[in-house]
Image 1 (tube, rainbow, N blue to C red):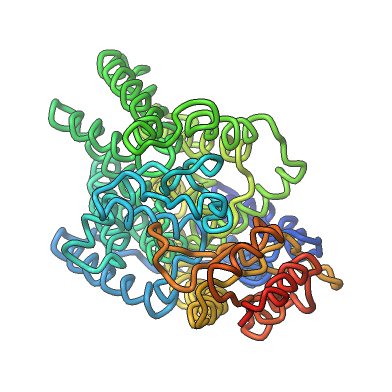
Image 2 (image 1 turned 135 degrees about the vertical axis):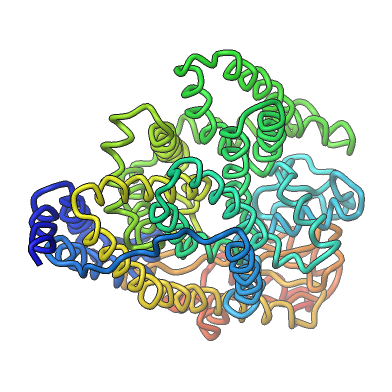
Amino acid sequence: MQQSVSSGRVMRGGRMGALDLAAFLLLPLVVMAASRHDNLFTLYQVQTQDLPILVVLPPILIVLQRWAPGWALPARAPNKRVLLLGGIALVVLLGWGAKALLHDLPLSRDEHMVAFDMAVYGKGRLAAPLAPQWRGYVEALVPAFLLNPSAPTGLVSSYLPVNALLRLAFSQVADPVFFNPFLVLAGGIALFDIARRQFAGDQRAIWVTLVVYVLSSQMLVNAMTLYAMTGHMALNLIWLAAFLRGGRTGHMIAICTGALAIGLHQVAFHPLFAAPFILWRWRQGEWRTALLYGVAYAVIIGAWVVFPTLVALQTGLPAAGHGPNDSRFVDRVLPLLLNRDPLTLTWMMLNLLRFVAWQHLALLPLLLAAFRAAWRDHGLAGPMLAGIILMTAFIGFVLPFQGHGWGYRYLHPCLGSFALLAGVGYQELKKEAPRRTDGMIVVLTLATLFGSMPLLMVQARAFTRPHVLLDRYIAGKRTDFVIVDTEPSTTTSDGRWAVNAVDEVRNDPDLTNRPLRFSSRAMEPPMVAQLCRRGTVSSVGWNDMHRLGYGQNIIGSNRRFDDLVGVLRAGGCLR
């Protein structure tokens, strides 16, 4: 009894103040999230998906600061067989979830372009040939993320190819919905290897690391999608496991894994993760190892940077002037570096709120407790925390608005580091109140498993369902073509956010799907008139979307879209 009282006092006065600090940091952000602001998509997501969790979490942390049951975590970490069987069960469950919860729909443009590239590469090509008759319509047919929209002779995304290629290879032996779940398993095995190395005989710290990883709703729901972020997370964990093992074999595996990770879909993500670990080795006096990685990564990054030029040379796309290199840098990279979003701070606060809500509920206090260890010692915690800070700062500077996403997907490559830092934070807290720390972890684990996680799964399904209905509605049109109203009008008279349907313009790269879908935003009356002469055309406007529950706040019509429909009506091709 005396020990329990003493532990409770330590929790109130010692480092367990991380719980109060976490609640203190969350409270003002929750107030902001509950406020009203026009045309903030991320705020809409926070308010409709995350707010109940963010409102409940601070008082839970405050209560646990002062009282937590003396429950103990398991004394032994799971063995390899249990881990493997549990991982296989999770793969099956996530594959089922991809179909049952998210309807196996590439909801966002990013996801659609993965399937798009798979279809291109599946034909043994680097780009799908584009018939001359459609070259003037390319931005209406593929509204975003095309490699060369200004002078197209072929169609392929501007993303690097490894994610699509790996998913394509996997699809030859199994349903591709299991690809990202399989990566979750691979990443979990690598995380287990790292945790055993990091925490040695501390079995409970290993448990905490694995539980924080497995009960991340962000990790689970993103694994049900086509996003490349699951690949980044898994490859980063495999890279780190091999890097820490060292030796000729370990470093060879790490460098090869890094080459895949850099080419997964964007160059920047893996180097931002890996750089602090390489510098850590340099500081430890292993300058030859650090130099080896520096040279290897310079070659790898250079190769992936010139990859679009190689595609251009092989497919006949323009390689200069307004070709892939100039378009990619001038149209996409340069604006990210030079144009500052005035809402950057707002976006990032909302992004981080989303991240907290979609993780194990114990992650925030454990992470705060880990800061001291990361700052104090020269072990693995330092470069893990540095990688997270570097990633957050870079994305905040370059692209604070993430668009669609479950949680904050731009921090997804660092989920393994977050889980490991949770283990470090657990070790810090249990030095002063071991049983109470265990009790806090158990309570928040149960709250995550039976509270936040089911709620977020339901919210994910509810958000996806109208997109599915609209996709089926468009696909069911018995016309040659359909024009979808994608005008960037995202607010209504009541000031609430409403969706933009540009992501519903999904076409196959060979353009054989019917009806072909066109984005109204890239269409002009002469283009519509010419389309009318080629076949029958139907339209999907805001009222159609509203009836399907897609963008419940879109009611009425858009004058520009109505003018385009008028051209179809005058041409006699509207159906």
